[in-house]
Length: 203
Image (cartoon, rainbow, N blue to C red; front, side):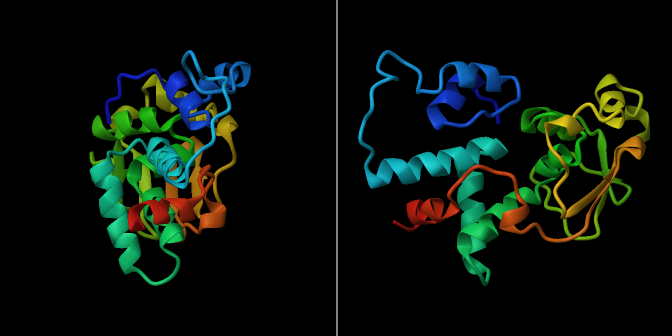
C-alpha cells in the first residue's frame, strides 16, 4: 500500500515505531507530530479504538478494505475474533517473509513479493495477501538468490530485528522457511489491543 506520509510521522502519531529506522526518531520525540503534539489530550473511547485499528493496519501495511474483509472472516471463525484476526493477518505472505528474516520491514517484504522473488511450495507467488497454511514452504527463487537483499538475509542481517516466532522454521542460509502451525496471538509480535479493534468494527 503506497503511503506518501513519512513513516516517522505515522510512527509518532500511532505511538509505535513502524520501521527500525524510525526507532531513534521516535525515541527522541515520543509524542504526536504537529504544533500541539506535546499537549495532553483526553481521548474518547472511539478515538482509542480507532487508534488501535490504525496501529494494526499500519503494522501490516494493508488497506481498510483488506482489514474489513479479514475482520469479517475472523468473526465467522470459532474462538476470539481479535485473536483470529491477528492470526489471519500474520499468515499473509508478506508478513511471513518479514518474520522469517528475508526482509527487514513489511514494506520491503511487500515489494519483494510483488517483484516475484518468492516461491510457495515451488510455485511463484506475487500476491502479498496470499494466505499460507501450515506445512507451506517459502523459498527465494533461484534467480533472485544472488541479489544483495537476499545475500544479506542469508547472512542473518535482518535476523537482528528479532528472533523468528515459534510458529515458523527458517533456514536463512538456504533462504527457506516453513509455516509450522497456525500463529497464536501470544506468538505474534505486534503491538495492538485487538479487543479494541473488535469493538471498533462491532460498533
